[in-house]
Amino acid sequence: MPVMDGITVCRTIKGDPATRLVPVVLITAASDRETRLRGLEAGADDFLTKPFDGTELLVRTRVLLRDRALNKRLDATETVLLAVGRAVEARDRYTIDHAERVGRYARELGRLVGLDAEAAEWVYMGGVLHDVGKIAIRDAILLKDGPLDDAEWATMRTHPTEGERICQPLRSTSPVLPTIRHHHERFDGTGYPDRLAGESIPLSARLVAIADSWDAMTSNRVYRPSLGEAEARRRMEQGAGTQWDGALVQRYLRLVDSGRLTELREP
Ligand SMILES: [Fe+2]
Ligand SMILES: [Fe+2]
Image (tube, rainbow, N blue to C red; front, side):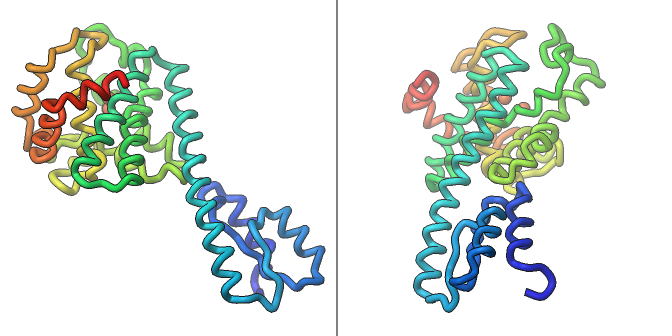
């Protein structure tokens, strides 16, 4: 390899958090023990001896890709725990239960509208992490006992982008970033941070927006008690097509009617 040798390539890939889960197979000469040891040190996942067999390469690649899928999941779980851990540190239990319920409600709705298992899990994770950016908002604003002024609202509205920023370095959770960033967009295009409208809002964010609002309306909050299910339903119907995706709201309310949501509330 003329510009960079294989070991250096391997070390570069494994040293960058964004690519460290990419499997690396080094192809070496059988006698080259020294290179193999250096390869191991550089983080290589597997070795093949020259001349190598095409079928063997294929089989080993499959195994590595399967492991990689697993690693990605483990890494993601770890990340969620970390983020939730930070949230616990900074906030009360109420927020954590809320985040967890939003994840469960959004995942269920996602499944109902045809997401496959993996996509539904990402929706769940996005739901759990949707407000993680609130960690960056001062208590004086976040827990304020009264209406926020304009400047305080402006600060409050940074939480989706703050959340995205916090989770960005963790490459394995990249599928949740759009959910975090866009969970306060509105279907009519008047939300934030990007004023996206309609189906240009990522589906995961449209799902989480519904689950988030529903849980906020049906839970006791710092500043007011639960509105009750009937009132929450009325507001949801009213906001279908403007605040939220109307078709998803219809589907969601059927989920409420079926009693499934109550089951998911305290599983
Ligand atoms: Fe939020
Ligand atoms: Fe929320």
